[in-house]
Length: 470
Image: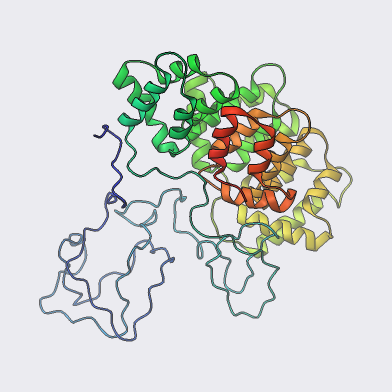
């Protein structure tokens, strides 16, 4: 049984639009050829076909206008040629007729992804995930900065796709759990706690299609308290939930400034743009207008800048530019009377995260003080806490979220909104890294802390999202 729009789990990736069809027997590897260098993006445009080019491949792209016609009996593959590349990157913007790589800005990237220019060290911070652990070192003889040990590669979330999940079967389980006298909370926990977000969100539409009722409404009538809030959060798309949380942080008396910074500093450009669209659609005003009407001063400027979703997302680092930015931050703070918050805002909100990690390292080497301590010395109030949070999130995102979780459960009472938001939004991103940072920093596992600070069905579902003890 399957549900329209819910792809069956076939165990493989579906063919990509515009991809090359399978080739009928490619060229055999040539002696002395270069090894496959997966990781180098294809260059826009490419070299034109040489005279007497290779015979056309079966099923390949049609001959391009202006190219040389295929020659009968052309030259065979020469020794030393490049073997065909398997699984290369999709074509970058700027290469006519090919799809753009998702999430990449226009134009071919400068340099190799995840690494600095040749001869430059890869900057990083102790405890911070490496920009690209697989990036080979250059034998330039230039002394490199201390490197953090690379985190394990691969998927770092605690929740994965459930093999063979069927939304029609899943909504039947949920319906039975809520039908009749009482509610089978364990059935709800077992189902939602073992489905990824892309498997949970379609359940809302499948439930209405099957039973003509609203799943969220039925759950609200059966569940209560923080368990209800957690279940409903798990049935929302990432961006819809972020927009909802931003709305809750702004509306009413008081503003949850930490929530605003947490979401806007940790999401990608594409995610922030999607949040803006949903916020306007759901709440009738732009996110920027909501921020502007509820905040003021340099803190407002910081939030407005972050909410644009326009940060440089290139992975390459220009060390010379990093030194210049470090000098600008020093001149705007420690090296003058007063503080130029606008200069901090311009650099922290526009530069790429790998670049900023290099800037922070250069700054510390330049003035002998960590950038966080300088901000605390030079600023105060919301703008201080906001700038420090942005720096922490950029330096080491899992460590930042580990600290946020610890503060949410520290002392009397629990900040359940923060706990729910982080556990839901990071469970398919970097929860395994957050758990490692948590036990390293606080000497006890996140699983243990949640177990001691929450209870009942709420605790059971949170522990499902946590994914295990450390």
